[in-house]
Amino acid sequence: MTPVSAILLYGTVALGVSFICSILEAVLLSTTRGHILALQPKMPTTAERWLTFKDDPERPLTAILTLNTIAHTVGALGVGSEVENAYPGEYALAIASTILTLLVLLLSEILPKTVGTLYWRRLTVSAGLVLHWMTIILAPIIWPIEKTRRLLPSVKEEAMTRDEISVIADIAEETDVIDEREESVIQNLLMLKEMTVGAIMTPRTVMTYVESEETIGSVMERIPVMVHGRMPVFDEDA
Image (cartoon, rainbow, N blue to C red; front, side, top):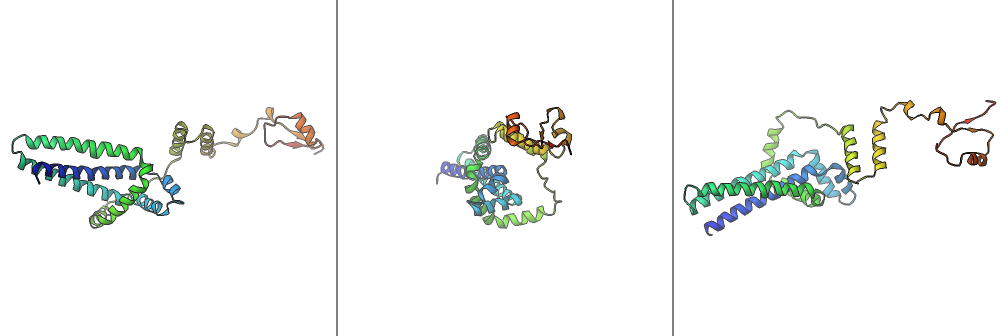
């Protein structure tokens, strides 16, 4: 194998592995629990894997970062060694390092993470399968890292707040995921706990009532358009 071929091989393998790792990381962080639960009826195995990842995200993240670090390290050492052997000189290694850094930034960071963030729904199934086998293969490396991590104080994950739900509903309405009426229902439900009885009562001046002796026909003739769903019934003798 020629030095140039070796340089290309080291660089391509390093960038390719890092590209996949960055996509997996973006999909892992972008996939929502709601989307996973929606997959459960049709793809129970995939949904179960993703629920496991979401319950313990450090494990797949450790696998991704471990493989990514190995790829970067081996790639940098391999390219650097071959460049020094093939092009001895003062500036060859510096130029090669600069080119490799730019390629890593573009092809293994910016581009794959953008792809993973934009197309995480389409990549959920395949990414889940790859992450499943990655965590199994790298288990001997992940295990001591997990043991070390458990020595650190644990932080309880905060649940979604009412304000966050309100913002999500607002964003969903703006992006046409739900219509304006559905968004209004969600916002009203969130405010229901703090809403007073007086705020939802019908004012006396616009209240519609019926007499107990009236027939249904006379009521419908007198009130052709019923604005209120319930109307008080009164009896003069009561």
